[in-house]
Amino acid sequence: MREALFIRKNKDRWLALEEQPPTSPDEMASAFTQTVDDLAYAKTFYKDSKTAQYLNTQAARMYLSIYRNRKEETSRLKTFWRYELPLTIRKHHKTVLFSLGLFTLFFLLGFLVSAQDAEVARSFFGSGYVDQTIENIERGNPFGIYESGDPILSWLGIMINNIKVAFIFFMSGIFCGIPTMYKLAETGAMVGVFDELFASHGYGLQFWLVVFVHGTLEITAIIIAGASGFVLGKSYLFPGTKSRLAAFREGAKDGLKMLIGVVPVFILAAFFEGLITRLYNDAAWFTSLITLASAAFVVWYFMIYPMRLARQFETRPLLVNPEYEQA
Image (cartoon, rainbow, N blue to C red; front, side, top):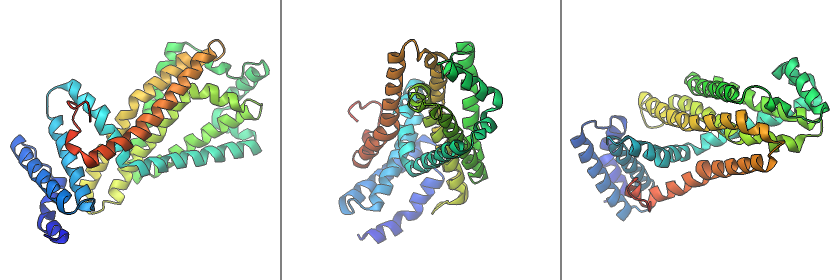
């Protein structure tokens, strides 16, 4: 059978399953069996085609959906962190890259504009904060701002604020992603201005060594939270072959997964900012180790691992199961 005829024969059933997945266990099992049969046929006769890739994705998604119905909550969480979140990140890797690019662009703009006009920092952070930072620099303790306040209260306050901002990023996506874009650009510019404030006094390198003790995780989470809003917005604007409502539901689900996935990252980043960053003078080796470990985690979990897992999905979709340690 030619591929075009194979698609025409089964297209309506595939789209129906995608837009309205079965809810009862028997219907779900039957649909999954049919999809796997179609996948096996496509792999045999249309290897490496878009049809085979599409069916592979559908079969994997249905498998995870079936597994989600199991009652073991520990296994559910393991499935989410081990498979669902990385695969969702990989699925929307272009959107994540767009979020990263937007943040980086406005980081550079904030840095350059602030270098031309020192008053920009005061407009972002307020004169009191800037004056205190300059006083710390003159006393030889440029990052003394991180040593002030109660560590636990600082952790909780930063954590609550960052998670609130992340939810705003996501929910703003419903307005075509425009408010999300504005907030992400504003955050990028703010970090750039903050960097220039120290660089202008000769502490550019120290800024990266100290602030990124917590900033590595925090900025990564902000970028992904921004991407979650863009996923929500573009799902409605560009539904593709799906109905606009079905595309929006899928975008909302994927965006929410990304948002939930970075909440623990925000919590840990806030913990580092409240309790660890302040040790940069007394235990520089420890704070440097935290920065390196954070960077390694970000590169592995949000970049390398999703790509590796996606390749496994393409070749062995049915092994994406928490019971198979070799997957």
